[in-house]
Length: 276
Image (cartoon, rainbow, N blue to C red; front, side, top):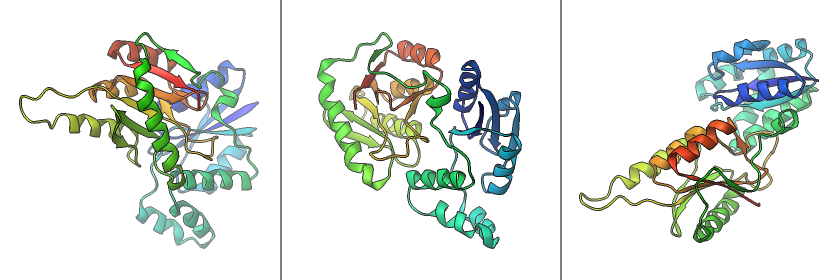
C-alpha cells in the first residue's frame, strides 16, 4: 500500500513516514509549505501551499497514493490569504469551510474535501502501529493514588468543554483548575502556568504540583488531531512545576516514544495512560 502523508510542522510526520515504511508501506510525503520540516525531503515528496488544494490533490493523484494520513501542526491561514483565495470563485466554498467554527470543524472540513476528491483518509495508527499510548504507568516516576481526584476533575472539565470545540488539555492542581488549552496549544498553555507560578510575592516558595491531562473531544474526528505528547511536553511540564502528564489510553499519540520516556524520567514527571 502507498501511504500519502500530508505533512505539517514538527517531528511527527517524519515519525509516521518511518513507521509506515517499517510496516512495509511505500510512502509519499506532501509537504505543506511553511510548516513541514525540510528533513522530510529524504522521502519521495512534493510541496504545496496550504491554500492551494488543486495542487495538493494533483500531487497526491500523481503519486498514486492508496490512503491519506494527516500529520503535524498547521496554523489557520491568515484572513488576507483567505481573502486572496476567495477572489477565485470556484474556491469560495473552501474559504467558507475554513472560516467557520473551531479546530475540529476545520479538520472535519478538510477531511471532507479530501474524501469528496476520492481520497481515503485513515488514522495514523492504521499505517503506523504502536504510536498510541496504552493504559497504565509509563516511565519510572510513579503516578500517586491521591492524584486521581485531580485527574477526574480535569476529565470533567474537558468533557464539559467538548461541545465548544476548544483545546484538548487542562492543568489541575489540588482541585484548582490552573489552565485550559486554547488555540495556542499545549506548550504555550504550560508556559502560561509556569509564568503564573513565578509571580508569587518575594520570599514565598514557588508552588509546585499538579497534572497535565489530555484527551480528545467527545465526538472528535479521530482520524486527525488526536492529542499528542513528546519529549518537549515533559520538559515544559517540569518547568511548570507539574508532577504528571496524563493522557487518554489508546486515544493519544506519543511522538518518539523512547525519547519521550527518557524525558519523563529525566524530569521526574510521571506518565499515566488513563482508561477513557
